[in-house]
Amino acid sequence: MLGGTYDLGTKSIIKRLVKFINVECFTAYQIYTCRRQIKSKFLKSTDYLSPKDANETLEYWRHYGCKPKLYWHKWYSSRNGIVDKRYIPEDIFYGFIIPFYNKIEFQKAYADKALHSIWFPNMKRPTVIAKNLSGAFYNDVFTLITLEEVYKHCENKKELIIKPTIQSGGGRDIKFISADNDQEMKEKLARSISYYQKDFIIQEVLEQHDTLNKINPSSINTIRVMSFFNGNNVVVLSSVLRMGINGARIDNMSAGGISCGIHDNGHLKSVAYDKYGNIFKKHPQGFIFKEGIIPNYNDIKEVIKNEHKKFGHFRLISWDIAIEKDGYPVLIEFNLGSQELNFHQLNNGPLFADLTDEVLNEVFNEK
Image 1 (cartoon, helix red, strand yellow):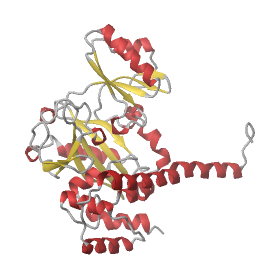
Image 2 (spheres, rainbow, N blue to C red):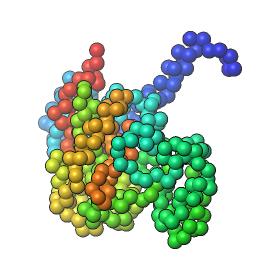
Image 3 (cartoon, rainbow, N blue to C red):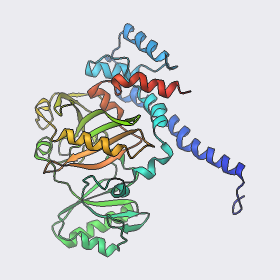
Image 4 (cartoon, helix red, strand yellow):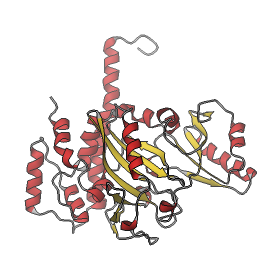
C-alpha cells in the first residue's frame, strides 16, 4: 500500500519488476536494435559468406545451444578478410554476454562521470572546473560551491568543454565553449548550464600528444580498449584508435569518426573503418595508418589492468584513453553497457579470440 509498510511479498514483486525492466527489457531492446541495424544499414548485397563457412559457423555455435543470425559473420569477414566462426554476433553480445558479465542495473550509477574522482584517484583525468549532481555544484573533491564560484573558476579560460555525466555515449550533447574574454565566457557558460540544468561536468580542454594531434588536430583522438576480468586476471581483448575526420571535434564513430586497430606492440594497423564498415586506406587528412605508433601503449594497458580489478560487478569494460602532451595516459571515460563491439571485430577479428570457447561455455552452459 502506498504510504504504508511493504510486506516481503510486495518487496519481492517490486524487486523482480525492477530487474525485468533493467535487464530483460534491456536485453530484448538490444537484440531488436542490433538486428535491425545490421540488416538495414550495414550489410551490403556484395557481403558474402561461403556455404562451407556458414555451415561450420552454425555447427560451432550449436554446441552452445545457439543458432545465430549470420549477418555479422558475413559483414565482418567481407570487410576485413578474416573469416572466423568465433565472431560474436552483436545481438548475442549485448543480449546475453554483457548481461551475464555485467550488472546492468548498476550501470548508470557506476558510469557517472562525476564520480571518476572517487573511482580513479590514481589516474590522470582532464582538469575539472566544476561538476553538477542533480542540481548541486561541486569541485572535483566534492566540496559544494556556488554558481558564482563556478563562473569565477572559469575566468581566464579561453576554451572549456561541458558534457553530461550520465548517458553521454556516442558524443551526445558535448559542447565546446570558447571565448575571447571573461564576460563572453560567463554568458556562454550560463546558456549551457541553463540547457543542461543538472548532471554535467565542466572541464579544461586537453592538449593531446603531438603524435595523435598530427592525425586529426580538431579532435581528441582516443584509444578505446576493451578489457575482460577473467578469474583473478584482467586481459586486454582489443584496442583501436578512434579518430575524428574533416574538422570534427569528437572522434566517435557514431558521429562520423573512424577507427584503426592497434597491434599488441602499439603499432597501428594498415586500414581504418567507419561505423558502416567502409575501408579507409589512409586518414582523410592524409595520415598513413601503418606509420603510426601509440605513445606509451604498454602503460595504457597496465593502468587499465590495475584499475579494472576494482570493478568485480563489471567483467567487461571499455575504456577511452587520451594521451596528453607529455605522454601520460588520461582517462576520458569508461563504458559498461554499450561498448562498440563492431569496430573491435572489424579491426581486430573475433573479440575473445582464443578465450571464445571459455566465454561461451560460461555464458550458455552455466550450471
